[in-house]
Amino acid sequence: MTDAKRQAALDYHAHPTPGKLSVELTKPTATARDLALAYSPGVAEPVREIARDPENAYLYTGKGNIVAVISDGSAILGLGNLGPMASKPVMEGKGVLFKRFAGINATDVEVNAESPQAFIDTVARIADTWGGINLEDIKAPECFEIERALVERCHIPVFHDDQHGTAIVTAAGMLNALDIAGKSLDEARIVCLGAGAAAIACMKLLVSCGARSENLVMLDRKGVIHTGREDLNQYKAMFAVDTDKRTLMDAIEGADVFVGLSGPGLMSEDHIRRMADNPVVFACTNPDPEISPDLAYATRPDVIMATGRSDYPNQVNNVLGFPFIFRGALDVRATGINEAMKVAAVHALKDLARDPVPRAVLDAYNMTAMSFGRDYIIPTPMDVRLLERVSSAVAQAAVDSGVARRPYPSHYPLKTVDDVYGT
Image 1: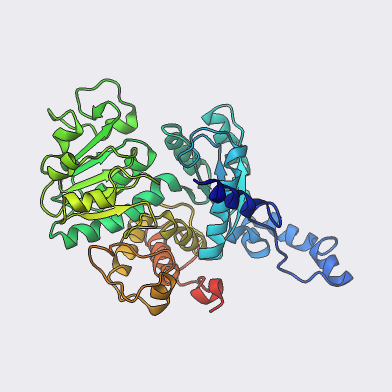
Image 2: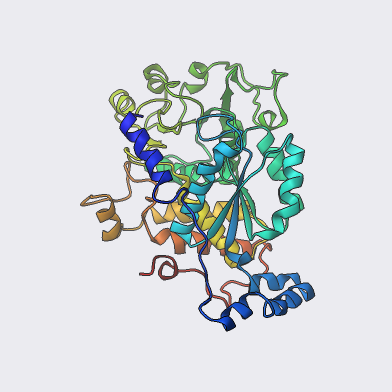
């Protein structure tokens, strides 16, 4: 980043008021009567109602529309383990996206915990404060145990976006890319370079969507994850295959799909040349992908490509998922975010990319045309239809899978584009 851009980023966060979020009042406070209702003595009445039935917290407080964005700062963006306080700008930023795209209030919580168990215990004790928890920037493999334990102990949605958000958007784009390539997920040979939280979640969700485990090869820093290795943790071991392939060059031969969640420049021209016809390449390391789109297109003009970057087509962007997934979960008061809800989000995103693109979206990207095809396999973040389409699909899946505590459609209307954007 240039000095000018660095200073612009610092100025943005510092001025005119430090930080990116604030608390707003939702009730009048202009008179003595208002204040008497807001606090003592009026506040005693909702207190009694909530004591009688804790579910009344959703009726009398903001619990039903607030998410905690929680981190220990052990894996901040691409910067590494810089500690909980350094993660605060990122957690605030996530809160901005919740509010901007789905009308959800968010509060950031940075936990200085000496161990994963201490983190789990801290969060579990205060979890009932919110309607949901978005875990963020927690390193693997600890993130798997933290999420699993909190899902078990908490009765609200708990979602590690670094895992599942990336997986959902990747799976949606992958289904569309394979369709364009004339291939199917259940027959595609998939190579995944990377074995961290996002990579493991991506492959698990692709299997849930129809990929076959025997067609999937995952690599970590030591090479192919195969059944002969004795250095695998339980999460990597799920993807161990019986193969004589040991390197990326071995694995990539004839592959239909490459998913990169590893590091910059790790896919070469020789690698992509070895792939099958109409290869699908998701090079998601950001800002510098495993292979640059320009090099990929020059080497394989038939490639269908996605990256994590906004300056190329087909951006794998988590903001396409988490705001709307939580919106749907909150609106039906789901007790969790399960596999059925994730798969519903995948198909809602997949299907939306196939619909005609509204003029407002074209204007937002200064484009005259945009349609389903090699350069448009995933919706764009500025598409206001995401709110209704993805949220409603997730809410319906929560009801159908038995984790919703209120019906859909509910007597309390689901949030709409009008609610959030005021259009």
